[in-house]
Image (cartoon, rainbow, N blue to C red):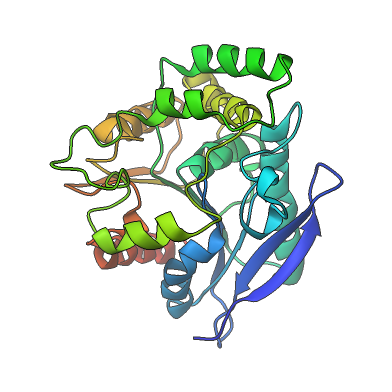
Amino acid sequence: MENPQEYTFLSSDKKTTVYYSLWIPQKEPVGLVQICHGMAEHMARYTWLAEQLVAHGYAVCGDDHLGHGRTAQAKEDLGYFGEQDGWLYLIEDEHRLRREMESQFPGLPYFLLGHSMGSFITRNYVAQYGEGLAGYICCGTSGPNPGTGLGILLTSILCAMGKGRKPGYFVNRLAFSSYNSRYENPQTGLEWLSRDQSVYLPFANDKKCNFIFTNAGFRDLFRLLRNVTGRKWSHHIPKELPILILSGNMDPVGQYGEGPKKVDAWLREAGVQDVTLKLYPGARHELHNELNRDEVVENLCVWLLDHTK
């Protein structure tokens, strides 16, 4: 398959150039999928997934967020979104990309897929801009986290002390130290990503992956999650928006299946009419990099085709 086309747009922070990739099928696309990537990674890690979607007729796009990938021009930019409201920039930048794509592909059924931190961004997004989407896919997401409030308080204090752009080593340990606790003989610290060990080395050796968020970046991460926790969030989702929730039942980000179940319940209680929850037994965080990724993509494409009008 040909390499994706590469483009840029100006971030909603009004100063940063955001880089994005676009994959286009050879034939007229049947729809478009916008991918919103996760924490401490970048869009190139979604190349295989994008190629599978293109093979089913979909155009695919996705940007490297602020503080990530090509958009983070300097090492000190990694894991930093902004001094005050970086989390809002992340949401607005997804909207800028969507508007750009809709101008290039007018009338195509438009789907949004968010993974991990990208699911927090996109859950915020669909509460604000969900009208007009053909469907939303929420992958590797989390339920309520009792530590979110404390995390916001701690990181806000650190930012007030002038440490907003410093790596949040202490916060990182608090947030992720337990992620490998349910796996036998963890060796790398990355076992929570996938059962496929071939995923670990490229992730660990990529200078634009596996970095520590800044204290300000962690504050924005916690704010993203807090804002999509509970019925107050779900009641803002368009009732007619089809939603697919995907997760592994051994994913610590999703509290081993309990988090996605909670998100599913909030949406159903809010009256969202078309909600599907799919938990994959034994699978961990990155379903698109899991041992059963072919099964995951097959199920995803069936759902997409069912909702492509």
